[in-house]
Length: 285
Image (tube, rainbow, N blue to C red; front, side, top):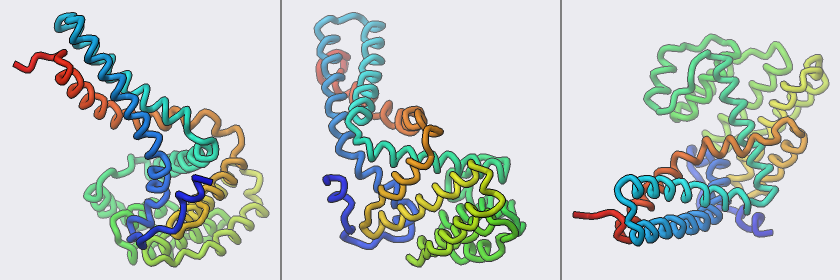
């Protein structure tokens, strides 16, 4: 019930970027309380290290080792509290979301053979050197164009995507809904559902990986729209997670470690520095 209340209608209408990253924001909001509580316990652990070092005075090497251990304790405690107390529905929805992100990254590399640009300027440079080819490879262009706000250009690319196979028709319908929703809140998913039905009934139905990916991509887009307009955005992700089955078991832990450890280490360094100085464990003059 608490999860449902926190997914109510938003007070203000999000802009295009807010619609594009609605799911990321939604999960961040759901995780915030656990991370804050875990961080508070992590600060307590770091403070204990600082007090112990101030009393023991182990020398420079001992102090450095204790400082490193304090940073590690902050990371482990903060991450551990968020992991242990994460409700199972949120964990399973997050598994589906992160699996879709990993699948999208894999598809990008398969289509382009290159790493994904990480900044708007890098995205523009990539687009300038990779003109549209009116083939499935153009799917990579659409994501970057939407990211940098070039919605009309993205629509033109969508209009030239091929529709020779059921999967290509699904991709085109999904991209049209994605661009339309982010650009001006007009993301009709019914054509996407019909395309998925054709995909499930067609000759590619024997390819379980392709079907699972299509099913999950539709669930993610459905969840994105619900997250913007106050619907139960966990529901489509949970349904998709159930259909994924055991294939994604164990993915979330390693994925979250890669996603969160670096910022937690930075926070741990700051916390340890402040705690050690405040406790007198590090000489200030």
